[in-house]
Image (tube, rainbow, N blue to C red):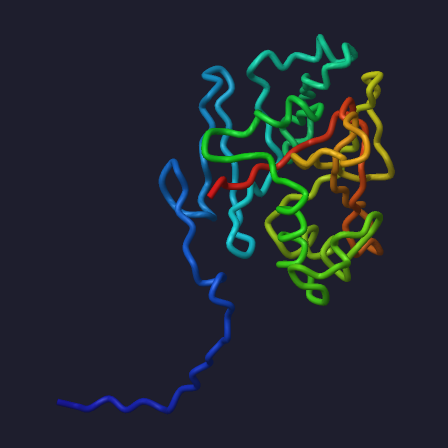
Length: 227
């Protein structure tokens, strides 16, 4: 029998953080990185991509749930507990749902929750290549970070699509091609306000914006696994 010979091959070894090697199991089955199905509304069953960031699992796209009396009819009644849905012709967007802060608190599927201000700080520090988790820069307001904004837009499957927001007067605002996400964290100075995040969808914007806004605004939201 003829013997086979092999040339020496190069073996590459990569160093990874322990949390990057951990598998996160989803409550509905599968692991983080798989799609999940939200069938709470039988007439509008939605499928969402997920993405692992550090030791957390996030929705990789905006929530599109409009159940639980979310209609837009009570947008200006001062309860901050409504949402408005817009169907888009763009196939990439499909449907955009803007939530007032109160409605956002309970909109995520079972086993998931609205990310807190601290959750967003963890995400930012996990991705930014200069300022890590726990860095004081994430406690600042305004645009923060070295390249967190550009990495979320271009390198992570986070689907950052600029959709603006809805004002308390129910007026759509494009806001210079920005996207806004609510957090679950209230302002400590004004109970009518809460913390949010925003990314500007332009090539020179490298950071991510953190500030407070009135709860009556309509922003998009992400969900994080409640583990």
